[in-house]
Length: 289
Ligand code: NAP
Image (cartoon, rainbow, N blue to C red; front, side, top):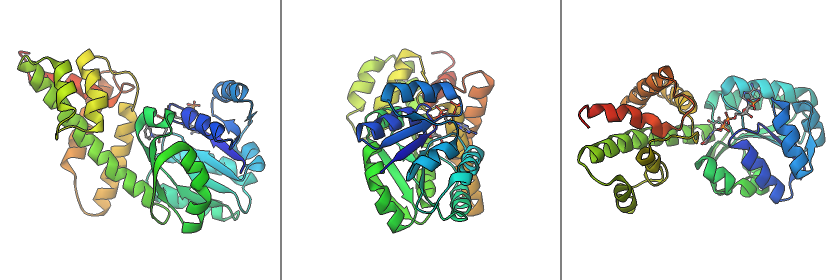
């Protein structure tokens, strides 16, 4: 199968490389052309001039861009060359409504769509260990298997188009709770004079541990928060969670708390840092530390 990849950001560049390793990658496209030209040269694949150029050459396209409006913009750029049999797999994190809208637009050309947001961070993308949460028909899911299998380790279909994004929103609420609790716990541990590296090493093996604790509490020990999962991206995801909860008549306190934290971090110029920079705020809970 000839696969094209669109959106070579922190996640997408790794995912495209893994498709190449599996012998599936025919070409790449990125809004800023330099990233596509550099990767295409390195992997010896086609650097597409626009999304339609890639759609013409491929049976499947994988998309990994930032937010709802970006996905629909790229879908509209694919549409002139969309053809019956083309399968578009969107790995971006957006709302279930956007997934349904993308599927409807592609259906006008006989093309198919599944939503396949991912979790596992940049490391999971690099190591092809992503969990991939899929919404779409059983037939399209079956067709996408070789592609998804090249990028991820745990691949689950949750239902029709939009269900993958609902599962991803569920995951983002979990991440919100963990990162805030880890910030508070690490700030508390520091206020108690505990050796933080040992706290991470030992509690990382205990019942209170999580992927976020093991992989991101070390950022808090070092006091540096290099871009992994950016504050602005998680804020975008939590606004999706808020909207979906509101539609179900609910307000989610953890989501609201983190949205306030992230607004504060963005205001202080930390929006491009990893979300573990919430530690900057939890540190202030202990003014004398
Ligand atoms: P990123 O590094 O900021 O990359 C974003 C990519 O989207 C870039 O290639 C960018 O192109 C492209 N893009 C943005 N708007 C576009 C538009 N209107 N038209 C065309 N291309 C556009 O983001 P990322 O971390 O790779 O995240 C990508 C998606 O994966 C997001 O939905 C995010 O929520 C999700 N995700 C991220 C993580 C993580 O840990 N980073 C984990 C799971 C899921 P340019 O290069 O031209 O800017």
